[in-house]
Length: 289
Image (cartoon, rainbow, N blue to C red; front, side, top):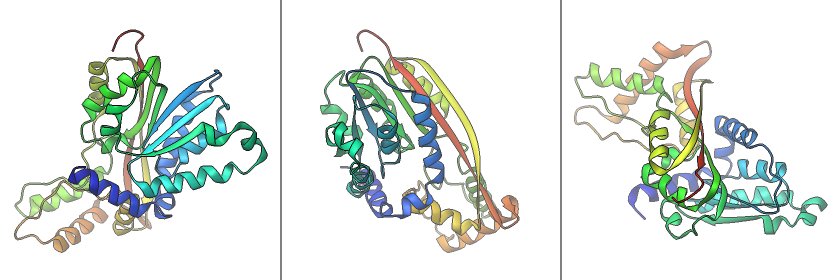
C-alpha cells in the first residue's frame, strides 16, 4: 500500500465514528440522488458492487429500496468505515421482514482498495457498479475505469457521483490571492477534481457508451472559514498537494487566507462554500471488452 493510500485510510478511519455522518450532508444528498436514478430491479439475481461504501448510507438505501433478489458487495478502504456500515445495515436486519429475506445473504462487506482489489475480481461478475463521492480519491482513475469495465457484465452499468473542479472555488481563490500578494507561486490546497469532460473521455476510452452526466453547483453556508475547514477535515478530506514555503509560515498563510475568504465570500452570519456535484452514468457495451 503506497503512502497516499495509507494516508487516505487513516483519515477515514479517524472520521468514521460519528464525525463523518454529522458533516456529510452533501454526500448524503448525492447518495439519495444516485439511488433515485437507478430505478427498481426485478430479476432472479442481480449483483451490485458499491465502491467506497463509507458508513453505509447508500448501502442502506439500496437494501431498503430493492427486492430480495439483489445482492450487494460493499467495499471500502477504511476498516473503521466498514464497521460503521455493518452496524448501520445489521441494525435494520432485526425486523421480521429482513429476517425472512435473508439479509446476511444479500450483503457482504469487504475492506480493500478498489484499485488493487479489482485486479483479482472475476470478469463479468457484476450487473451494476455504484459509487458515491469516492472516485475523486482514485490515484489512477483512467486505468481503474478500464479495470471496472472488465468486471461489469455486458449491458451492465456504472453509476457514480463525484466532485467537479468548481468545488471549494472560494477557498482556492483565497489561497491564490494570498500567495500572489506574498510574491509566491500559488499552490493547490486539497484534491484536484476532474471535470465531467475528462471523466467522459476516460469512460469512452475504457469502452463505455451512452454516457450521461448531470451537474449541479450547490452552495453550503458555514459560521466561519474555520468551521468550514473543520467540517471538511471531519469528513476525511484533509489531503493537500501544497508544500511548505520558506518565509511564509502555515499559521500566517491560513490567517491571511481567512481574512481574504471572509472579505470576498462572507455572508450574514458566516461564509459560503461551493460544491460542484457530478453524477455520471455509463453503459458497458454488449460484446468483448
